[in-house]
Length: 161
Image 1: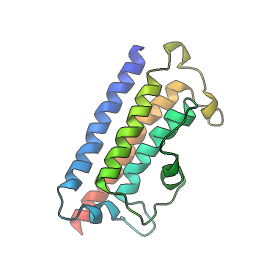
Image 2: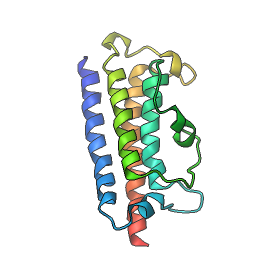
Image 3: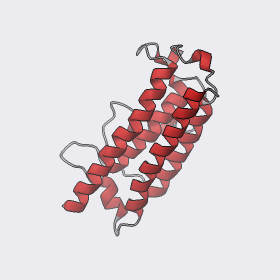
């Protein structure tokens, strides 16, 4: 594994620690489902959607964008992928944690299969966007922190209500 990919893997691991801290904090609340379902405004995404969107995006990149392979999470794609609207069915903390774990395992497996020589290659699943493997990995690092921040802000808003 190249040093660049190893660095991305370490960043992803750190980012996940922060996401799991938010999930762990929610698990200590008297009503975790209320926090998970809280919307910061009409039509806005709740915490559960933000975190599940992180997981589903990683799974999509691992099994469709960066390489083509089967996924065990395809039933969740329409609910949480880009462009989806946060529904009212709120997954449990256990389902969220399991999905985060499964998608991260898939993503790390895929990332570690990318040779350094292919970092500037645009994979078939990203042809439309024109993103190279390297750009996709950078975006994945940013993506989790972006949505974890939204989930964290939403949690703080829920606490303040």
